[in-house]
Length: 245
Image 1 (cartoon, rainbow, N blue to C red):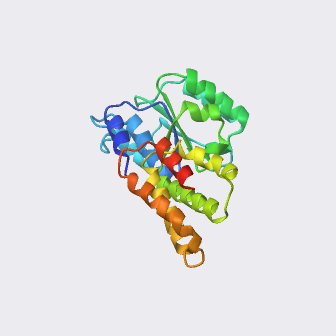
Image 2 (image 1 turned 30 degrees about the horizontal axis):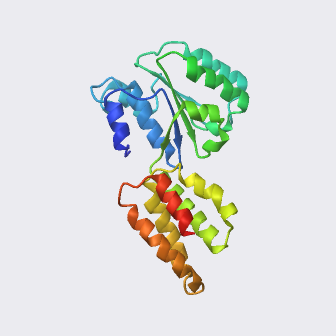
Image 3 (image 1 turned 60 degrees about the vertical axis):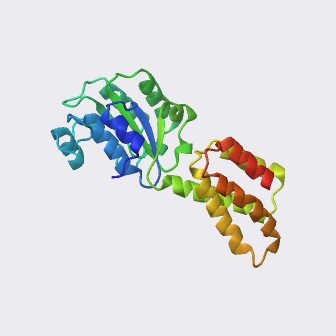
């Protein structure tokens, strides 16, 4: 499993957060790597060789609790049982890990129970919320977790943003209609801008034979794509895109 470099360093230093939201279609392997790092007893977590890592790899570690593996949605009483279990110390690992494989299925009551546990639970309790639809989780839950994009998710999201940008241009959307999307670009990582602009430029270029009027727009977007190679902030890039339209 390829783990982002910054996360690998934090694993090695045993400096992980106690709660993560792992987003994307390929979220499971990244979550498993995090769980292994938490229960690892080797020198550089996850070492892959200690008893904790081996048991984690086999899916039999007693301190990695997989909640709702069948995706049926945890009921409130099941979430309360999980909360009670969290106050029982780990069996053999430094941490006790709760892996919620279908966290978007939690109802608001269950999420609020977990929210208090995340905020006030024991220091050894760690939480992994997995979801392909993080927007279904309460904002309070999302704000208490560090969000991690599974491999390939950043590219997928950037491609979607590029397609949206192209659609707004092709349909002649008004400045008012474009504004919410352009404002959302300010929250993206700078590394996503080359990907989303490439996706938009490819879509628009394919339409040129039928839409020669797109050429001036392409001429204005191409320099923005080139500027992505320099340390330009997302705010400046999104403003530049707005001006180009």
